Image (cartoon, rainbow, N blue to C red):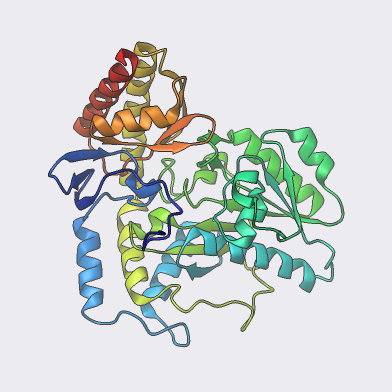
Length: 391
């Protein structure tokens, strides 16, 4: 008999009932060090005082009114994001998946309004993940996500990861945009180099294409900059954001230049819940903390500490781990042992990691993790690897 919760996840046998900073407390009282952060969502950890205060104060005043009216909290967060980024305008969603839907619509409407309606194709890449909506799975194109869900939304060209020649050859007069993650998350923590991002931006400029960046997982401070593309010194035309921007409260956004968003006029898109007062009050509190030079400098310092310690872990356990990859506090351990076995061994050592493609485990801790907690994380991962090797 089918369970009351639709069984689309193979859930771990863990039930967490409380969170404190970088820690999760299981129903039986065990304390797990959280290196997953809800898949890069809990940017400020669990129950951060500023977020608790923001949502409590807002909940006492107003939860929801819909986008039929002006929402001061939404305006405030949009102003913060515009001031801190390349963007001129923002549309708020509830998730990264919804942000993908709008990004695709925005790109196609742009060319339609420019009198080039044939430019509907969007180039995407092997290993990508853009959510599980119809547009999201069509954009990624992998059999794992698309099998059984046809007919798929047309208009996506899937290219190999990191193949500049294939990318250039794929550009025709029906291509309107390139959609790419600066750091692939689900694909196995595969970052583009600064030069690769510069080259893609230059290619878009050369061929009059829109550049859409998916920073749902790598954005909002996770790379050590507010947005990962900043390291390369380039800007997109459209960018998808979610996960960390709400610190655990469902919130996403599409950021765009005035030109890229020019086709999105009244009635072309909407959302009942997107950008409601609760979500945006929390988003403003996240930005108050994350979008500051001191906080981002601290993320970079901790990222260096974690990466150095992980390199030592790989050297100590060459039968379990192969390499460290990633940027900032978005790191991956490429495994020699099956990554599912490593994740399970880490559960036994009471540390949370997240599996990804290419036999990688993701380490996506809260950006507020402390130096002592990083050291404890390495101790627990060492214990997990030792137990695997002894089995």
